[in-house]
Image (tube, rainbow, N blue to C red; front, side, top):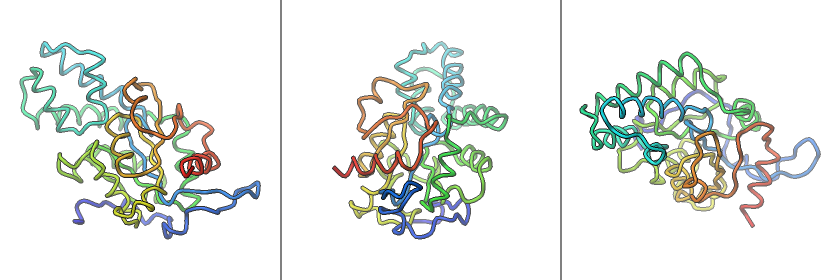
Length: 261
């Protein structure tokens, strides 16, 4: 894997990934089965930014005579920046791919630099994962500039690294499993080891992301946020949560145990 493809966001404090799975006690003295790594989507999962994406996509579409529909919005959620640009151009937006992409990213960067719309409980849960020495990796189709903005808003070492839009060619992005294979490598796991991948936990919200995580062999939790769609309800996942409010490692342990059968 090239150095460009894998990005370390800090020295972390994650320890060996193999030390984190199973048998860790919690306060009540009961055994926990914890994942070897936790992978987080960004938009719609950690932050409620899908609303911002929809705003700028809708503006670009309607200003150029393209009808904006809920189906169109849902179809663009969780897809790559190139796919969004290509789809808007196909529908009639008279710009090149780079111009559309720059327009979208500039808008998002302005909005998120002013205020990150954190999903309820997300920051607290990230801290729990870090304190348990479980590697956390951000896995998103958003560009590096937006990813770095989020990383700058959390304590150093919260993430072991990230996978972003620039990390992979278009044909290897979600819904392909490759972003999660790359995340496993960042967490020092073998992505070709199905048992190891099955001991990873993924939080996703979009159809493409849920399919990618499931295809990678991970345990998948669907975050049913404000922009949840019926299609995402039908996509593969082990369980759903509305957000991270009150969500703890005890809940994670229960999910992992249930996934093991």
